[in-house]
Length: 190
Image (cartoon, rainbow, N blue to C red; front, top):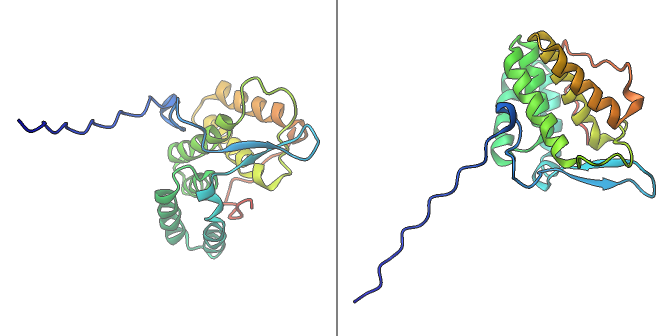
């Protein structure tokens, strides 16, 4: 009697997402973390797919500067199809949504980008800083500040303060720094 073919197993669903946004729990972090030289400073290491899209992100920045926001938005969505954990693409989509007055959508994109960065940082870190001045960390800090702004706009003061406290703990030099959120920055970190 011939052997019965086994049905392929259905893929298991991703674990529940935190607060409805951000990377799925239990999944390997998309971003990594590496020490800068022999210092106690750390920098985010973006996934290879995001690094390969740096030129595309620069083109998107030029589109935004030229006022071609619809084309820029479509390009960012296309980039996310190939690299869903591209922190800077989510941040730029958040900035575009905020400019258009869609605070909830902006909060989603900023929150996802912020969560991507947090997932790369061990909870028990406490052994150094994540300097905002490093280009690979800037998108994370901009996303965090954008998230805090959106949370305040949506009436969530305590979570906004929590995000700001976390950013301050990661880089004390960011105290008092404000991000201009009236138009997209258009300049992704390299």
